Image 1: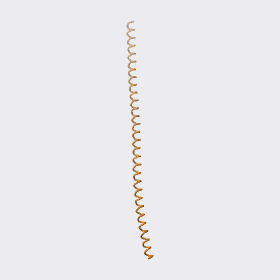
Image 2 (image 1 turned 180 degrees about the vertical axis):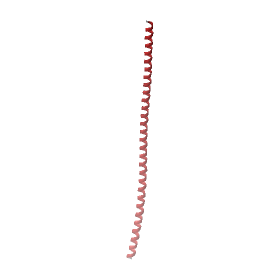
Image 3 (image 1 turned 120 degrees about the vertical axis):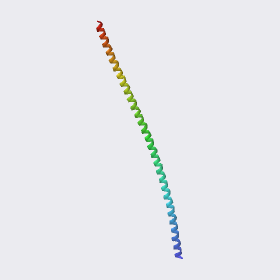
Image 4 (image 1 turned 90 degrees about the vertical axis):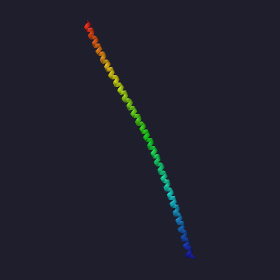
Length: 107
């Protein structure tokens, strides 16, 4: 009778151990799935942060390019104005010389 009780106790312990193993396996699988979901969420957050940073960087680069373009146009306009003034000054000088020559010819 004692041997039967030991066998039944051993069977019961095996059954408990098997149930514990099944529960631990389910718990571990649930933790693995949870960790995978967290990893996916972190990756999505990182990706959205990188995209936001990229957009901000592109906006800053576009502003910088626009500023450079405006400065270049302003320099070109200033150069054109300077050339025009030099032409005008040269024309005025030639006109003055021609006028002085005409006056000298009359006198």
